Every structure is written in structure tokens, then in C-alpha cells.
Length: 133
Image (tube, rainbow, N blue to C red; front, side, top):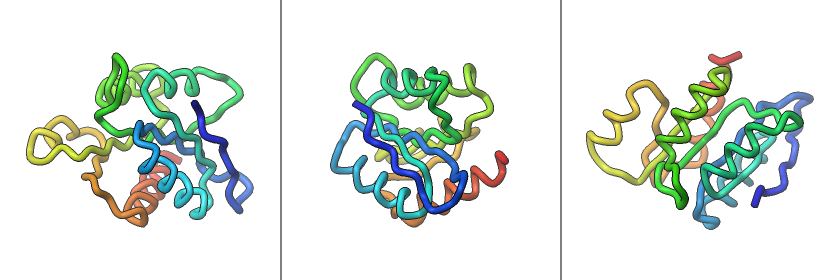
């Protein structure tokens, strides 16, 4: 289920799609990003994320996705799907996976190690959306 978006204080804040199956992680990061002025949507898996991205009435600038989630597609698959079908959208991948393997898989995408600091997430999103603009 998609979490209700709330617009931030600016006229056209970047829109972020948070893809995280753990509600105790998803809801706090959504609330923090909303407090930072972003327009934020939240879903729990890749299939829901693709459905949001395919709807014409919903504009998303950046997908912030966890790697591990239920369903047929994980976060790496979702990132590849976004890059193929919506290359104009930025992607940031996050995972609790430790070590070189996670970083090797993510050479071309911004990566944040869990547990992450909410301010670090907001700063990374700001940097990525500025570059994409």
C-alpha cells in the first residue's frame, strides 16, 4: 500500500519514492524527508514501486530503495528496471549487507549502508537531485 504523500514547504520539491518493506524503517524516513521539504511516497516492495512509477499522474524524481524486500524483484532489480525504463529518475540503494559485495554491485549507483543516519539520507538525496536537475 502506498503511504500518503505530503508536500513540503517549497513550491516544487523533489518527489521521492521510498521502497522499504519494514514499516518501522519506512515511516520514520518518510516523515524525516517530509520535514526536509520533500514530497514523499512510500511503498513496501518493487511491484508497488513500479506501479507508482508507471502512473502518469505521479511524478517521482528519485527512488530510494532497500535491497532486500519481499516479492519477485529485489532492490537491485528495481534499480536496474528504473534505469532501463525511467533513466531520467535518480536511484539510491540502501542495504544492511556488509562488505565489499554490496559496494561492488553498486559502483554506478549511490549506496547507503544501513543503519543510516536520516540527515545523511537527506543530504545524499539533495546532492543527487541537484546533479539530476
